[in-house]
Image 1 (spheres, rainbow, N blue to C red):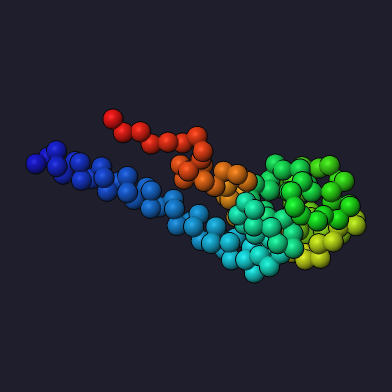
Image 2: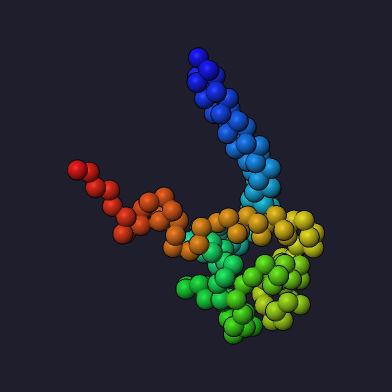
Length: 146
């Protein structure tokens, strides 16, 4: 009887720890997704290959600017040579034409909390070409049964 009670308490403790950490992250990510859809989504997709007026933003952080195939970039952005990181993205979203003179992006997000939420959302997107791999659908993944 003590074993059952101890096991139940252990399961409950682990469950509470898991539940306790998740809600704080989910609303922040939900807010970032909402802001992305309302502020960025008309021109940018969140999935690899979902290019619109601008490139998809899956795997943006760590990617060289102006390199998504099939997208028409401004000369300023395509020749910039920089790699997107959090600091550069904050500056760009705050004032694109100041951060990259000659860019064609016009939307700016002055509110730092909104920029941070959008960037956090982008960081949680799968890198380009990895969406299927994370779900176990990469060409190299296979299920074997014996």
